[in-house]
Amino acid sequence: MNGLNTAAIYVLQTLGSLYLLIVLLRFTLQLVRADFYNPLCQFAVKATKPLLNPLRKVIPGFGGLDLASLVLALLIQLLLMALTLLLMGYGIGGLLPQLLIWAVIGVTALLLKIFFFALIVSVILSWVAPGSYNPGAQLVNQICEPLLMPIRRLLPNLGGLDISPIFAFIALQLIDMLVIRNLAAMSHMPQLLSPFL
Image 1: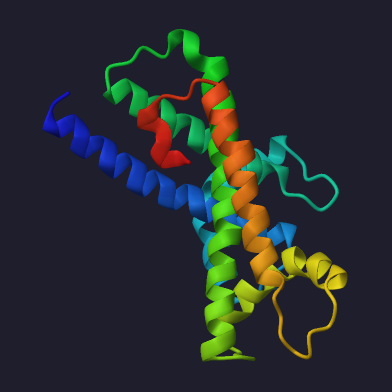
Image 2: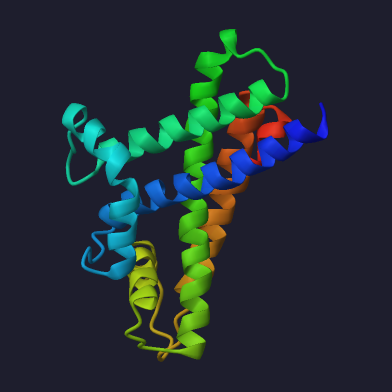
């Protein structure tokens, strides 16, 4: 593999993963019922609209879930992985079923990362700017709240100290270590696709 292929893979993975993040963020925002008048939500809607609108005509939503954006995320992940393998010189003819499994694993891993990093930002904001009305801070809180609310119900009242993010971090890390990594290993995901995890 020459340096040009390495550079192409880097650009492909960086830009493709950024757009994939925006698509998955749109799915997440609808999943947590975020305020779509928020400017950051509007950005996600406008950035994904050209590819999402044709899919919505074919794939309807179900139970409040935007299945079209989830399918779009899977297709983008599948394409990114296939192009990465092709640029590395692998043939992908017989790998389509495995590529689909790897795409599901990659999208699930990215979804966990969205919640993980939203939790980190939420914890930092609770120290630096508690109760902030910044659109970004409100969006992060809207993403984290459905994850933290069930944990808060189980924990005893600690006099205003909220330790629910600690348990959420532990749960997300355990899912990543025990489920995502093991599924990737069991499905024989090549090491060169590990940046998608």
